[in-house]
Image 1: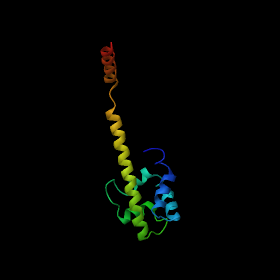
Image 2: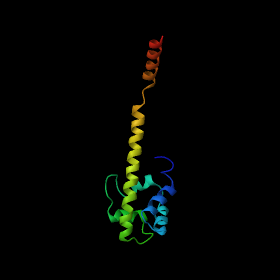
Image 3: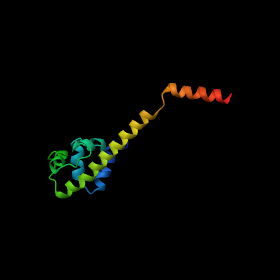
Length: 116
């Protein structure tokens, strides 16, 4: 994931957008869940919806959570997981789709031979 997604400000922006209170955001970041990639794995494995107990763990008892907090946290967790998986897929495709140096060299030689 790019530098922007790894920033505290990106996380802060996403969780404030889903109506988390400022003290909830501060508690989340104070518990070292301070970037979207960390949020992607902090509550549950990608592809799963975190139960309330796992969301409680994100805040480490620093504040009392309510039903609105539980509901609000599911969206940024899902988005963080989706961003991470998309980034991983993009990196994999980029690594596997690059032609090998020898293939690239062979293509150049063939192109030179056909142009002469």
